[in-house]
Length: 201
Image 1 (cartoon, rainbow, N blue to C red):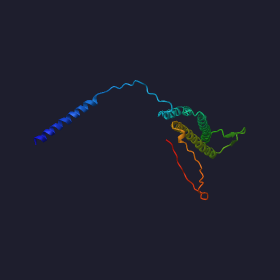
Image 2: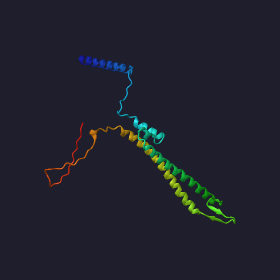
Image 3: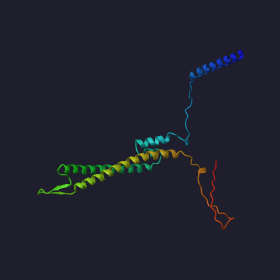
Image 4: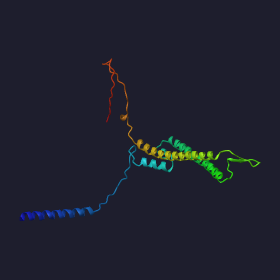
């Protein structure tokens, strides 16, 4: 019984001192100094490259493609975004003209689509129903152009980021796929189709 108590006391003291020393060691702060600047050699994967390309494309459309050195893609992005922006602005201005004419006609005033001759007779170029349907169509065209502009803007950001990822993949000749047709000279009459996969390390 005395032996059990003494073993238990010894074990308890060892556990307490171990816990105290572990806590003491964890509070110490060690200073680490870097003597040399680490530089990545050319051709090594750069994890920031895709995010930089996406950031540049978000700031100015087409700049991510230029950052990826795909210069021919930037004019395509600018042309598509310019076209959709022009369609939005054009449809919006014509929509406002028809909307103003519709409001004036409802108020009993003369609009740009109502002509009054010298005798005071008025002739309507576009009916009220025509003004309503034109407004509806122009509003749909305007909204579609805006949606297309936003979609192209987002897609060019995604394209720049994905392209920056793909540019860093290994394109060694050992990774190429070369299909070949090898005739079977033993079996002339029977046609056989097969698949052989060969890869090198």
